[in-house]
Amino acid sequence: MPIPVLGSIRAGTPVEMLALNSSEFVLVDSDLLGNHEGFALEVVGDSMIGDYIFPGDLVIVKYTSNFSPQDICVVAINGEEATLKRVKCQGDICILTPSNPSMEPMVYNSVDVHVIGVVVEVRRRLRNK
Image (cartoon, rainbow, N blue to C red; front, side, top):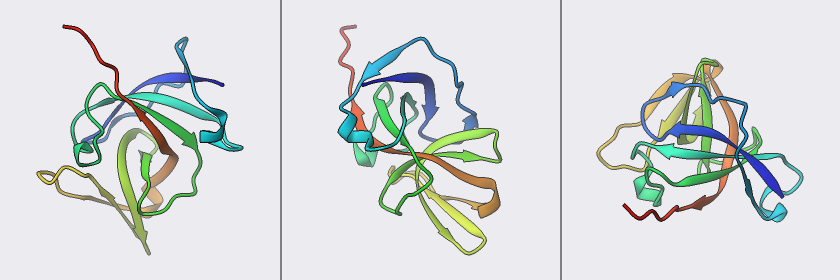
């Protein structure tokens, strides 16, 4: 099934929210998404390299707000910024954890954090330069 490529997402410090219009699509196996809609994003930054997600990779994301601490999520912060991290919420705080050992977790008020979706596949684009 075709899903839109919505642009890029920072695997690092949160940046501007995702653009929600696109003319580029990729094909994915519908089993990856289950009963959910999906989208794809190109990764910018290196905060998730411990999970073998590198700059230039394409992540396939299932729209859902249901996640576990093991999931890699597309997270909106304050409705204005988005990033790719693992999320663990405890009471009034959410901890966004990178998988790059040189980077520190980020802590936010839980009311400021909204999980947009969960990464279900990573695609690496090999380029000749």
